[in-house]
Image (cartoon, rainbow, N blue to C red):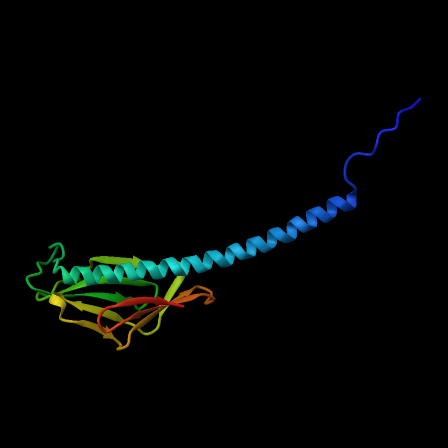
Length: 166
C-alpha cells in the first residue's frame, strides 16, 4: 500500500503575490527614506549655520581676538558672518582696526546638497554689545535642498536672536 503524503510547499501564484507585495512595500519605504534624507540634510544644515552664527556672536561678545597669523589685530571692532557669492559657502571674519592682507578668516564652510538664499549677505556682531548689523535689514536666510523640495528659514532679529522656521 502506497502512502499518500500531503502536498508541501507553495504554489506559483502564492509566491508571485508575496514577492509582488514585498516589492511594493519596499519601494514605498525607499521613496520615504529618500524624502526623509533630503529633509534631514536641510535641517542639519540649518542647525549648523545657526551654531556658526552663534559662534560669531560669542566671539564678539567675549572680545576674543583672532590668531595673529599674518596680521595683528590691535583693536577688535566686530565679527561678521558672511554668505559667499556662490550661495553654498559662508565664513566668519573679524573686523580689526588694522587692515590685513590676506583677509583673516576664523572659519569657512562649504555646504553640500543645499543652497543659501534670501538676500542676507552678512551679519555683523559688534563688541561690547554695541548692536547687530544685518544686510539687508530684516535679515532672513533660506536654506534650500538642491532640488528645492525642502527649505528652512533662519530669521535674525535686531537683537541677534535666531529662530529656525519652516
